[in-house]
Image 1 (cartoon, rainbow over the protein chains, first blue to last red):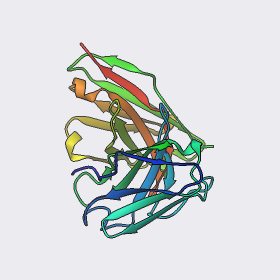
Image 2: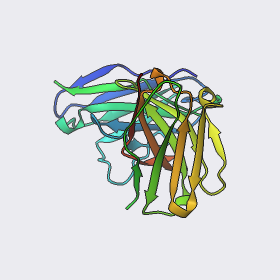
Image 3: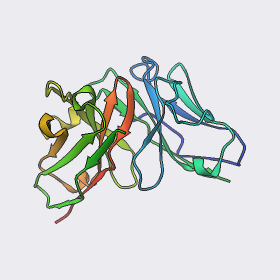
Image 4: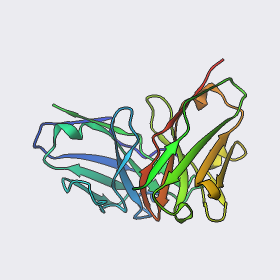
Amino acid sequence: QSALTQPASVSGSPGQSITISCTGTSSDVGGYNYVSWYQQHPGKAPKLMIYEVSNRPSGVSNRFSGSKSGNTASLTISGFQAEDEADYYCSSYTSSSTLYVFGTGTKVTVL
Amino acid sequence: QVQLVQSGAEVKKPGASVKVSCKASGYTFTAYYMHWVRQAPGQGLEWMGWINPNSGGTNYAQKFQGWVTMTRDTSISTAYMELSRLTSDDTAVYYCVAVSGTRWDYWGQGTLVTVSS
């Protein structure tokens, strides 16, 4: 089971909207609505930002939103802020024996 | 509030085993499956498997079958992950994650395992 494909890096200016893609296959992203997104600051544990494609846990800013089309899921950060600078990972349930697969990770930086 | 507190950093020699603990508090321990995920230095996240704290049943990623053992002690609300036959490729931060349904809400702080001769 290969990792889901994410861009290595994305940059944005404060106030902008940025979007991170996560591409898989029909066996994972495209086959299930079990895509999640995590934010990870250096030296910290990942934090759940989105689950089941587009649901936001309580306490997560509504500037974060998720969507999916076919085999590609996306995380959008609107009104980008400096505190959003972090690594972001997607994950999905998969029909393979691995059961869960993560994305390759995207480093988000402020311009 | 839910807390997962993991054991401290470990340094092991190649071929040895390591056992990482994850003590849960703030919720009913048997209510959430406990998953384990690892992250090699500068790398991404890798799912290792889960344990059902209620039944003790496990499901390991194919890569780790025969090599990882997940157990729990419900009397002290603690889950364990033991990895054997360590190599330098197993140097990573290991996380426990309490999962409710499809929500991976609660993560431990991570345990760094370094494998070095």
